[in-house]
Length: 236
Image 1 (tube, rainbow, N blue to C red):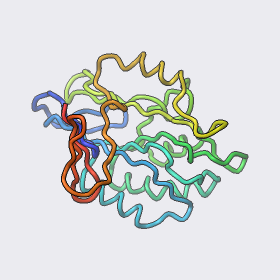
Image 2 (spheres, rainbow, N blue to C red; image 1 turned 90 degrees about the vertical axis):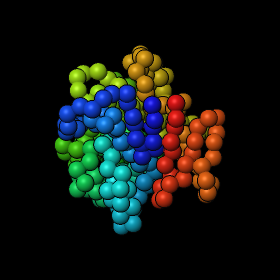
Image 3 (cartoon, one colour; image 1 turned 60 degrees about the vertical axis):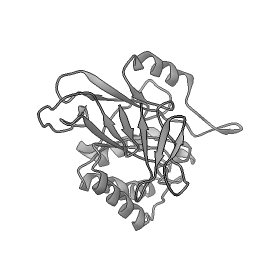
Image 4 (spheres, rainbow, N blue to C red; image 1 turned 45 degrees about the vertical axis):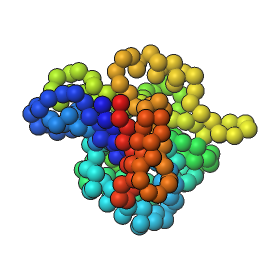
């Protein structure tokens, strides 16, 4: 199986009829390919930078992902009511204009400020869902710590067999002494539902190398520099 950071996910399935993705039914294509794009640490404020939206638009048009996952620090402490919508709409509109599905989870910067004039994580998630409309993939498991923790299953092009699980976890904001992290109930839930289905987690991911030049081999994994953003290929 081959995963790419943009990320192309290949499954061992044959040619099958063409179909349409839906936010509750993601499937490998007839060629055995599912393209996943991760967007993290946008950290913009209520005066969004046009270059950020332009970069995302270019990346989406180039790689044509089946799903985009936004994995935290989506704004830089911009949770004030009214300001949050301005910050988030800049990139949500890019996804909607390109007719691309997206899912959201949170990091430490997403709810730094507290009070009646600021949105909680639950309120932010509800706004993403409202703004995203039919392109928002709602994977949240309400009983888990945080918001936006859950799993998105990717099925074979035909039939109900799950070929791949994508887990997203809210990593919290702050605790005494520093950053928060994934909680025990999230880990136990992950262990209880992951089973034997391949999944994208810290053991199967490669961090982007910021070194220029040719690909660098690490532990039988290849980091490959592509034109533009870094693309990580993992061969297993």
